Length: 482
Picture 1 (cartoon, rainbow, N blue to C red):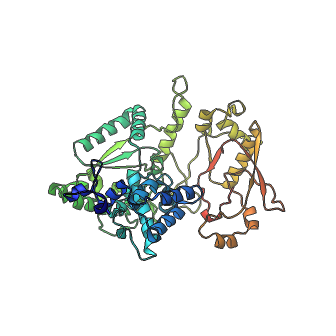
Picture 2: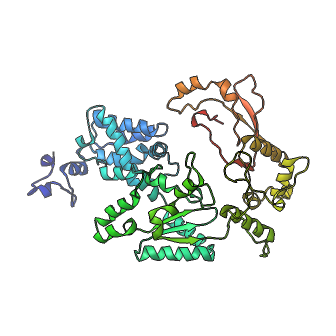
Picture 3: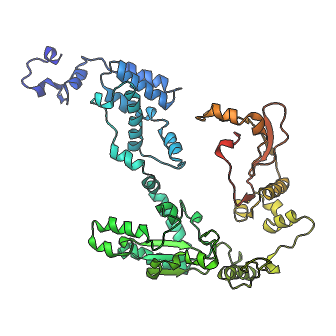
């Protein structure tokens, strides 16, 4: 086509040159001369359909165009519409990985979208490689994305993390600051070492994404006799491959920080005696002799100071008593038939004296001046009533909802299985409307008696719950759609 148009070309470069611009391919030069039809009709087709079609439907349409339509420039069509084709990719990956806060950059979303298109083409015995201009998925990037550990560790915002660090750093007390500086030095100078932070109330649930070492590194809970720490050996092997000196260092020279509170629940040994439980703790392992122990003595959950900066002796006494209980300094007694003393007496000054209505007493104690301060968010956030029984949760919530001022809002529940569920037909058979009408959840106010129609009216005040059960679990398949 170019030879019929270009006059007297002396080289292939001149043949691909139009209006002083050298094009990479003969096809591009043909486009520049206007010798080929463009893909405007396919672009308009996708632009029209994307208003109502899902990402999956758009990918099917794009694959159909590749297979059965004469697209002159598939790459340009892809670059113009890849965002529409990948519209649901992030949502799908959040659901598949069970990671609601997952974030992906454009290159990652493009890769996942190309994989989806590849799957559609494979059904017709075709591949993206049959269209040389189109990019192919990056296998290494997909492998990295599908690694849950890497994905979770990369899912953060540097600016937000810096602001969080600065705010937390300013709130460190002297004991915490000492450990912080020691750990930063160990990381900066590559000193390595094993550190244990022993303090009241430390638990993995207090850390963002926190988890136990057994969960993160799949350490077996039942260790065999004479077993060694697998993580220690693994890190020595990995880090020693680049530096042989790391083979002889604890955990391969990587700084390891452990945290916990021996005053809380100790390792569970079925039918184990006290000595067996103590022996299962980390301070009885071979690694403990290399551990640098840092102890925190101040309970941060209960502020010992008043609003004007004065020491609250009652709160200080309560903190000291809690530590004494954990350290075993409070006298304990045993009941009939018990081998070990495990019952202690709570001092009277720490017990709320109730009258005729215990719920009214505990509410007035934890939420004083509630009627006048129920719109104060700080006032509500710094208080909570904990109870292990859902019945008590419902009773206390019901009592406090009656104290709320303002208008109540009424919502109708559909009481049906979500149509978007993958097994909706099977679930509809397993969970009929009559069953869903009978469900009551601790975090919601009581339902009214189910009416004859398939809707249900519940009153939900525009306020948060004031009581949260310590243990709360609802099967995902039995949630009512509200």
